[in-house]
Amino acid sequence: MPRLSAPAVSLSASEQDELKPLAKRPSTPQQIALRAKIILRAAQGDSHGTIAGALGISKAMSRRWQGRWWALSSRQVPVTER
Image 1 (cartoon, rainbow, N blue to C red):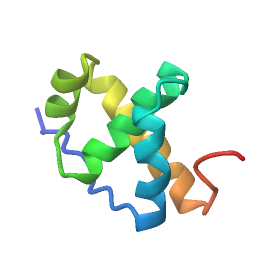
Image 2 (tube, rainbow, N blue to C red):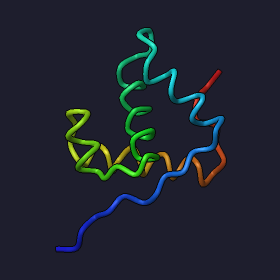
Image 3 (cartoon, rainbow, N blue to C red):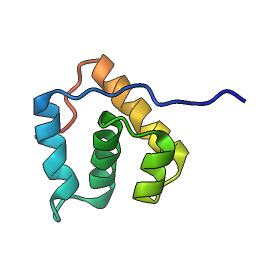
């Protein structure tokens, strides 16, 4: 079976500056914080398995949110609403 490797996620400085507080702020809804953590770890080069193990999620969830990140970034849609 072919190995499913994560496509490289690269974040701009402004994207990192928006995602880091979301991941750490206690008032952020936990679903949003988890998604931010997934993308930040993917940007560090972590694999789906590493991200899943560290965050207590499935590999499928890691794949899903990275895929959604790619779909949004390819359309040039802002990540967060203000």
